[in-house]
Length: 175
Image 1 (cartoon, rainbow, N blue to C red):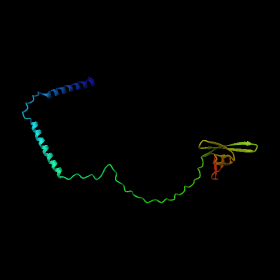
Image 2 (image 1 turned 180 degrees about the vertical axis):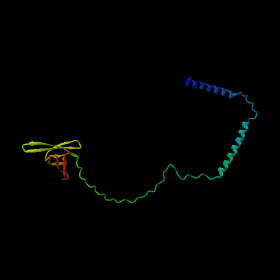
Image 3 (image 1 turned 135 degrees about the vertical axis):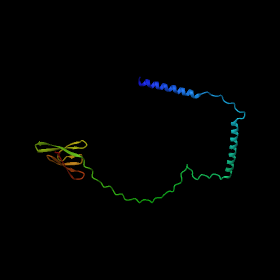
């Protein structure tokens, strides 16, 4: 026997038992008894009505003797007026002028030196790369990015003169 078949038999048996227990609980019903000529419920209603009228009269007499309800003190739909707090006026403090910093040096690097033999002698060309991807091929006396002027080009270094600050910067080849 499979598990599905066993579950089906158990479920069917439970349904049969439930039906039998429901049918057994009904039993025989007796016909309703004849009602008395004076209704019990109408007598109860009359008694209840008399009690309600008595309590209403008592409540009215208590309300007539009591004080009227006080008027509400606060209105929840309006804001209370605020007292303005006057703060003393601040005197304008002297703000120091920001120090003027020299512009940052551009990130440039010497990537190579080329040599040409001419009738005038040996002429070196510096190959300078910037961080922005620009490549400058400069000889002595030329400028780089409108900021540096090439003073001298050696076999493994270049000397630059800063046109803004007047200082000197030396770039060397990496080993």
